[in-house]
Length: 279
Length: 279
Image (cartoon, rainbow over all chains, first blue to last red; front, side, top):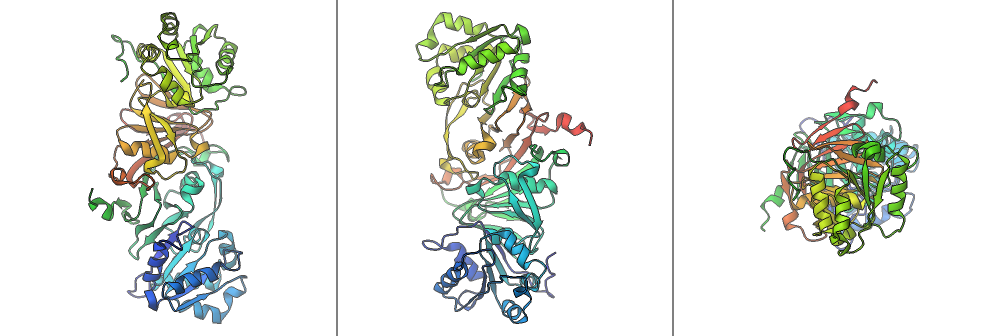
């Protein structure tokens, strides 16, 4: 469960990114992450644990430095033992912005899960630190994480396997590379198990900026698909065999683009600044 | 527009099928089409115009004969001239069930559109004749047909191109091979143009049996995804450039499996016999 905010302090932003965010021409997602972390005065820690590529962390370090951030460190927690070292935990807890790279979300959950790093990430976010993750890093942020899944847009019981994630919030389940990998079925199947959570499907180069008061605003070139099963009338999930399609009646779906918002408490979507755009 | 039913007669069933329907082990969709066309007493006409394969029509002829139907004819309207021959129109108008094969829906609209065949199909359906189509044949049945589209689940203005179809009804827009080809985005984009219609996405080996009173019931091994834009709060379609994602807030989505129903008038989904299934 998320850590409670410390007396009166606001929780920090939570920023799941759908992967393949623009790093050259128009890096608006990364720039806004930097801005929310303190701009030039930010102290950013990049955690490349999800990735097996040696330079994932260093690439982001160079990018954030190029945006004028002086203090950027890469902390590659590669084993569970790494995650218990007091010196590292101390460094991590000084960050004003934390960025989890892409890779394999099971590396994140198996290496960080239950360690001081995971606890520190939750504590940091609870006292106002911005936490972003891209691709696997995005999927890991919530309490319920999609570990594996099949592609194709009709949900089946076998479409998805959930695992516990980092737990900055339990309000939503994230899926990434959404449009690019045809993942509506697996996200919907995840909600069919227990409709309390909100499904958030992130296209590539698209992010959900979730404010301290739980309003989601979209940034980037694609769409964020919000699936709300709150008014679900009927689901056949409890009776479905592994490969049966699942019947789900009464789903609400919103397709949001940059500027549109969704309030995770009231479950209301808004066109935001899109509604006032000149024709 | 659909032909008006002749004094007091009920319109016939309309049966769009998502393609690749089971023809061997469990041909429940084709069997139900035969049953609704009169069973052993049916008089079935197969129209293989969508297909360029010589034996598409003959295969269905053999299948329907194997199900005990004595009178089954294949009528391959291959040119617009074919579609104006009085002898052929006479034969077509005797059918109790008409089946359009898969292939290319633009062959159907370009060859049959505006001819006596199209008019006869509408008249037959209006006086009670069952009309089914699979794949391209399914897409063609409605007034608004998806002619081309791109795959991927977030809608873009360029996701879809519509063309006029046969026009048995204008209540819905059909998309087929739905789960298999990731077509939610293009179906949703079609609704974004004008939200009055209901989107019906048919998985393979899955059909929507639409009764004379416009209740849709699902048959087959997959799902039918109903997208209802009736309560759409906001759409950015009017402002979107070709490749922009489209913002659509307030879509209703129902994923129906065999036995579930959707009323095209009231727009209410029901679990039908699934709701009473023993656990």
